Each structure stands twice: as structure tokens, then as C-alpha cells.
Amino acid sequence: MDKLIIEASRPLRGVVKVDGAKNSVLPIMAAALLTHDMCTVYDVPDLSDAAVMEEILNHLGAHTAWNKAERKVEIRADKSIKTDAPYELVSRMRASFLITGPLLARLGFASIPLPGGCAIGARPIELHLKGFAAMGAQIVKEHGFVSICAKRGLVGAKIYLDFPSVGATENIMMAATLAEGQTIIENCAVEPEIVDLANFLNAIGGDVRGAGTDTIKINGVRELRGAQHTIIPDRIEAGTFMVAAALTGGDITVENVVWDHLKPVTAKLIEAGAMVEQTDAGLRVWQGARQNVRPLDVKTLPYPGFPTDMQSQFMALLTIAEGTSIVTETVFENRFMHVGELKRMGANIKIEGRSAIIEGTRKLMGASVRASDLRAGAALVLAGLVAEGTTELTDVYHLERGYCGFLEKLSRLGAKLEAR
Ligand code: UD1
Image (cartoon, rainbow, N blue to C red; front, top):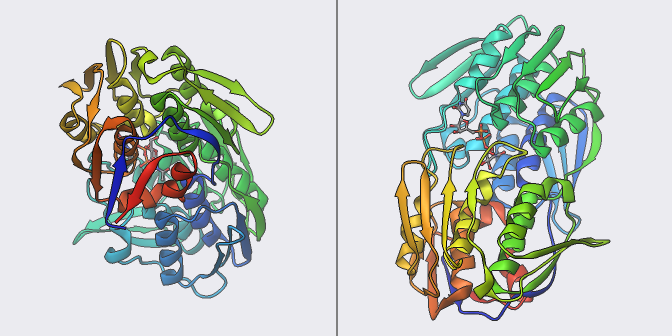
């Protein structure tokens, strides 16, 4: 799919089922490298990012079998596993860096191209490396690669993260599972995906305690074994459909959600005038009319704060609010690339430092716009549904990285869109 053509649509109505979480499946697939045994992962979303992770695992020598109909991936890293990942694969996805923790733990070495910056910020990795170094690894950066070496194995350490980075918490947690002694990660991330990874690590025989709090303790074990694990539902996909209901003045029941994971999104939608109700199968979001959206102040923060991955979708919603909203991005330094595109659709948005000031407008207009990243793409699709006329979205491959069957799911809810 090269382009997405989106037409002004009627309010979206119906039921949508959320897939497994992208941000859980990536570290969990990487963590399967920690054992020789077979790991079976269920509720794996059919996403291009998960396919890249599968390719990387295959490159390293692991066998994988992905049954898409059953949403199941089997991974067995029983042979001799390579310790280097090629630039062609790693450059396609930043989360590839998550293989370093497991490789280091199992083989004492990992060599990987340094991830560059991306559309939403510089995205350094020094917190990951600081953690590995504290556990005794030597780190050498040359020719665009970073080599991490712990020939005599990793040793447990006390690590304080300057920022509760999701990726650094995951990588250090994975590295520590086979380290000698205890590792304590302080000021770590508390996202639900961290808890999901910890549950997987414990299922394969690890000893990880405290995930979901700001201190995680990992007691190193000698060996890990295979296990079966089901991925948690994707809270960002759920949140995106919740915003779609509010923005179009529709009524959507979102199934396969964990209510608790959606608290900040739910609170802000209610503040914006939407109704949100817990149902037996998930939750229902409805908004009387799209003209009733109230303005908001939104500030992105690490979990349990408002997720940065929902910032652009909320911005699309606030472009049609009755009044002035302020959206402040504190997690990534450059996550306003969608602003220029929304402005091309008639939105009134001004950026001041890390904040965007949005003056609600009565109507958006269809335009040719470009998805600069995954969530920006989702925001532009949502905006296109309420814009007058036709919106043509390019660089839609970003959507396939993180939304499983997005087009089909939206169409079933009544959205008028077509892939070209
Ligand atoms: C993960 C998610 C991504 C989400 C983000 C924040 C995955 C695959 N991706 O990304 O969808 O938007 O969490 O919730 O799970 N930082 C440093 N040094 C480091 C590491 C991070 O300064 O060594 C900074 C980053 O530049 C960024 C902030 O910390 O400004 C948050 O990054 P981090 O939590 O690490 O995000 P990711 O794990 O990359």
C-alpha cells in the first residue's frame, strides 16, 4: 500500500477488537534468545515491526514459525547463535537494539549498528549501555557499530536510570536474568509492557520481582527454559479507536483491552466530553456530536502519565474542539512533525518550545499529507475522517509497523478509506 485515500465519513460505529501489543511482542521475541528451548508466543500482532524482529532472530540463527491465522510465533534459538546484527535490518527498526541484552546475557557479546536519530528525536541509548557497563561489560563504539563484551559473564549491579526509559529497563532486565547475583534497577519504567516482559522472563525460569514499580530486582539464574506466553492487548491501538469514536461523534465498543492500562486516555477523553463505559468485553466510547469536543491541557509523561504514543491522535481530536488546548510533549524532543500536516488540513496550531497551542476550528479540509511516523500517520487518518473532501496520505508504511489491519477495522466501523 503506497497511499491511503480518506473521505469525510459518517460517525464511526460498531465493535473493534484490539490485537496484541507491539511494544510487548518486540522485547518478548528478543527475550526468546535467552534460551535454547522453544518459546511459543500467542496473540502476536501481524505488524511489519514484528516481521523485522523475526528476520533479525533468523539472521542470528534462531528458528521461527509464525502462524498468522493462529497469531502464534514459535521461536527456538537452539543452535549456535550469532552475535552481530546487520545494518540493513537494524536500521529498519529502533527496537532492534533490544537483542543486545539477551545476546550479552547468553553469549557475553553483542555487536550492533548504533541506532541513529529518528523522526521523533535523537533517541540515545546511553542508559542501556550504562546498565551493561555497571554489570561489567566493556563497550566499544567504532565505525558506526557498538560492541558490548562481557567475556567472563555479567555480574549483578545496582543501576539507577536517570530517566525511566522503557527500552533501557527492558534491555537491562533481560541481560540481568543470567547474570551472577542480583541486579537492582532503580527509577525504572513501569509501563504495562515491562510487566508483560517480566512475566515472560519468569515463565522461562527467570527471577524478576517488582516489575510495575520503580524498582525491579532480578536474581540471576544459571539457565532459562522454554515457555508459552500470551501478549497483552495493545493499549495504544485501543486508545486510537477510542479517539476515533470521540472525534467522529461516533459510538465504538473496543474489545480485548485492559481497562487499567487506559486510565490516562480515558480520563482525558471524558474531560473532552466523551462518554466512556466499561463493558463485559472491553469498553464503549461515544460522543454525542463531533461539535461537542471540549478543549484540553495534555502533557505526555512516562506511564502512568499520558502516553506520548497517544499525543498526535489527541492533537487531531483537539483541532476541532470548542476553544484552545495545550499539548505538551515531555518524553520526546521532536514529536510534533504531524503539526505541519494538520495545519495543511486547516488546523490552527502554534508550537512554542515543547508545547503546541491548538485553537479549535469548526472544520478541517482534506489535503495531501505525509505520515512522518507511526502515530502521526494514525492522527492524520483520524483527521481525514472528519475533514471536508478527500485526504491523501503518503508514507503509509508507518501504519503497518504498529496497527494490525487498521484499514479493515476502520472500514468495518464505517470509515470511507481506500488503499492505492
Ligand atoms: C518505547 C516505545 C515507544 C514509546 C516510548 C516512550 C517500544 C518498542 N517503543 O520506546 O513506542 O513512545 O517507549 O513511551 O517499546 N532516552 C535517553 N537515553 C537512553 C534511552 C532513552 O535519553 O538511553 C530518552 C529518549 O531519547 C526519549 C526518552 O528517553 O526522550 C524515552 O525513551 P524510551 O522510554 O527509551 O523509549 P523507547 O524504549 O525507545
